[in-house]
Length: 446
Image (cartoon, rainbow, N blue to C red; front, side, top):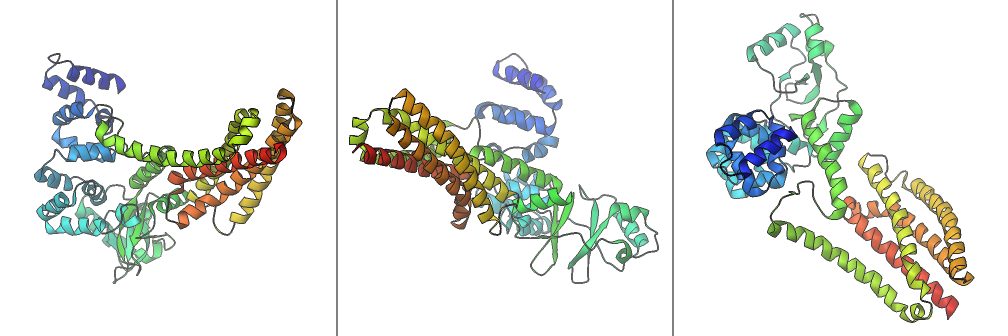
């Protein structure tokens, strides 16, 4: 794949080295996912050239695999007719995802151009936040009644001739369209044709509430090994289904967020985004960090006279802050992961806090004594070693407490701990470490 991509990029960059027809041949050797990677691996100007060479038959499939920033750029070059044509090739949830990247005015134009059936399905999905089961669901489902015979169901499926993608089970509903269970295709194909659906259906199959968070949906799919699951409203009425392909997208996006969020970047970040678009995102995060740095500097400034008397304090300050930051980050990362997996909640938060406090105390005492002895020997000053050791123990303990409680506090404030947790924690450990270290030094050397 990479060799073909390199060839195509070189061909398109080298004016006159190949004809568009030859470039199309190279593109035809790639799968839609590979073309999507190729588009994201090149600057915007070259993307437009590549996109114009993509075959119309697979262009819609390519769109499904693009990250949001690049997708917005490609969709901006498409007209309403092309977008409407994509609706016939995509599942409702996938097409809804595409529409949500467009300006509201263009989205409305596309909806108005669709036939009534497609428009109603799309509006149903668009009415829910995209990070919920309702926003992920596909409204195309196959339903049967408990009283139907297996023979009747099989006859109905043969008349359809085609099943929705990733159909592993049919949904069983009552006369009010309320979800009551599933009928797996395996059970349907192996059952006696004369028995009713009621006799072979699975009434234990869990349905997803329409407002369920997408991360919770992914957790359930993982725990229950699901391929698809029904989506119901508050009254239990079947609205649609979520399939494993959408759940995989959520898992990948959450993994990207976990890696990029601490740096103030999103999972949809375009590697080759124009400077004018990227500078705002980077600048905001740098500004936030600058404010936290000023807070730590203000604390240091309070003890200017002490630092002037004992210059070694300036050399040792980063050690205290760094140890607290690392200890806190370990705890913070563990707790955020635990919350995401559903392992950490109010019922066990205090147990976790006690555990992390004990770990921090043991680690703080060990490394505090070691560093205190080192400082006392190197600077020939036992008092300096004592100050450094106490400050390190206190900062590591504060870091453990903060790292444990901070995610819950931020979630209560409706702030994503994966994004803000690192910055807040660093501020706490820096300010605490400098204040305790320099405060103790002022006390002992006054």
